[in-house]
Length: 88
Image (cartoon, rainbow, N blue to C red):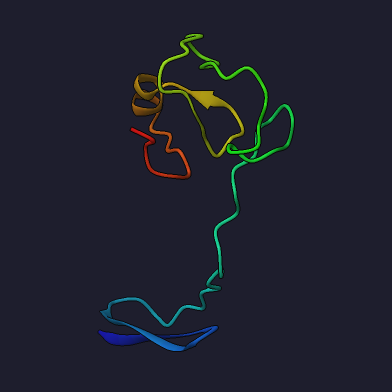
């Protein structure tokens, strides 16, 4: 067992003890914003017709990482997540 130390943009980060060898991790400063696959705009700026691309529902439709719009039931069944928390 050995202690894992990683150097990030704000200094060293210790993950604790692990059975693996030391690893190098690049820490992103900010997650990439999801953009609509049609207009290449983020969810807040998109003016496309928003409906679930799987079931064509208009209820609780959110933009996901693949650039498609999903309703809550389809997001849950496909294990997709919207970038931001629910607007409810």
